[in-house]
Length: 90
Image (cartoon, rainbow, N blue to C red; front, top):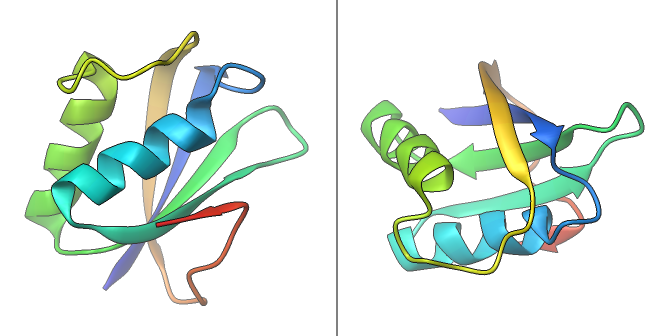
């Protein structure tokens, strides 16, 4: 089942969508990242729950030492049944 992550904190204008995309590629996850009008970033992932946990942990810890100038303060996780599309598709 697909998952929707809503990232909040300082996540727009700081390479967050690119950062999310690169982590997804490195972990072999299909998905997308999109800025939302409320200042959050929506990440859609097509993977199992174990990989969602790995993805979130990697986002927070920047395990791959990727360029990201923001700060993710909170990650909400929801089930998602729509199509996987967005600004940055990976």
